[in-house]
Length: 400
Picture 1 (cartoon, helix red, strand yellow):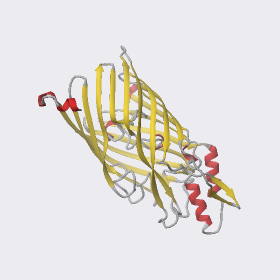
Picture 2 (tube, rainbow, N blue to C red):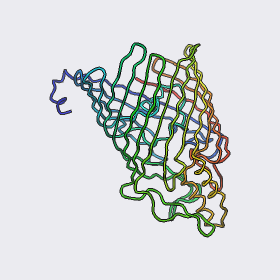
Picture 3 (cartoon, one colour):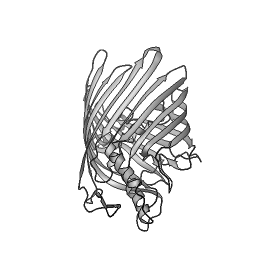
Picture 4 (tube, rainbow, N blue to C red):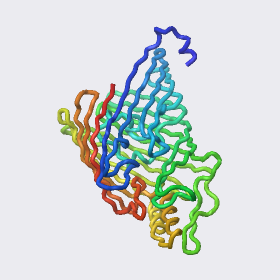
């Protein structure tokens, strides 16, 4: 960067760009789904505005800064501006790329562009898969090598870095002494992540697999506390984890089928050996079909996420442990911090391309929960189990 500042002004090539989504979503339930969606309708779930500055410093060097305005990631009421990207790129040759700074993680097929709604057809990316990681950016370095072929390019990318990110919890009944209830709260975690991602890409098809190692700490504090059963009640014991080592595996395909039909499928599996938040140990997957018909692209997808059976059974045992107040309220709270996932979603939607850089999207989706789902903020006295939630979404997506 210091070398760039010493360059003549005419050597710099600056390019501005931007993106945004104005989205409205409404469900047929009074409680919140995916933080914001209920039967009153909301613009907060999908609306986002971003801007990006790319500076080409030379043939090999460039710098990128991206800022965005979106709902806060550490409370459910505010909006916040944040620096999503801020990195320097060095391309010593056409087949090597090195980036350093705040970069986007190469996780799922659309993780790197998940804020730019104009780059994919869904009204929103399937949360059964895309909620499996609490972070999309970190401060570190990524190195990629490309092997160019006649029909297929092969890309290997390794990365490493760290970031402090919040994780949202929700309690139906109680959050602790002096805390309001029900409601959400956010805990900040220090995360270090490294990974290797392999991608094969042709003009019409993309294949990607990734293996990631995530290390989680909490600024000297313990992560979670063991849940014990004593005297007919579940309660928090002493101790906790100093550090969690979490493996994460991802896979995705995007294939062009005959008759201009595109099939996309993605899978993610994460293993979390937490003494409390056992439900985060889960897998998620979806499969979609879409077809371009002039300016229209109708699509359908089915998605599912499921925690391991032992976590769901533990949630049920605690949640169904009926005790008189106030102990009964405490049992619900302890069940909620397990963070269970057992949910499937089917969605039907379409996009209409107004211009090459502007899309209208409309979607109906139906989420069905099994044992429980932490994507649902169940009301006091209620449960997120065996729920059917219909969501209607409409959005305008653009880039410039």
